[in-house]
Image (cartoon, rainbow, N blue to C red; front, side):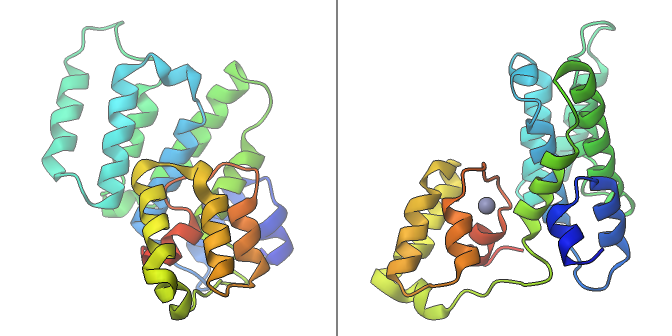
Length: 220
Ligand SMILES: [Zn+2]
């Protein structure tokens, strides 16, 4: 996978397989878990009424971020197993896969399986393939591995730390619509990196794990 393929591919299996092998970059469990959750959330309206699926995905995100207790997963899975047959949420299996991210041996299997399941459901229920959007989400989380961006300490210190405090509030409140404001603050602080400014101002949706927010917040 060269830079053009990384930036342009719509084959998420190919990119994940390459990531697994390459020494160029080793994604953290957090990044892979948040990517899996972002793929699942693409089902959007389909899971809106599915309480268990949404609870499972919320827990999966906290497990990926390391803010959930390991026994929360066991408790959730037990509750799901105890649901009477035929009453399970349609997509809860996807959430249950995302919950396996803390398993050392499943660190790659989780994003692969979630992406494949969502793409399968999307083929049946939405229109077209999810491949292109899943690849975009992978790049949203990991950035351009061939040209890693750098954040200058001076940008973070400018205006009493406006840039990191904006980034923190966007992250905590999932207020990704404020990314253009972060772009303006970065520019005011002296950032002229087109990749960074363009990313803040792009039309496409950001997710938790966004490479730029992570860089500003020092998250991996
Ligand atoms: Zn982003």
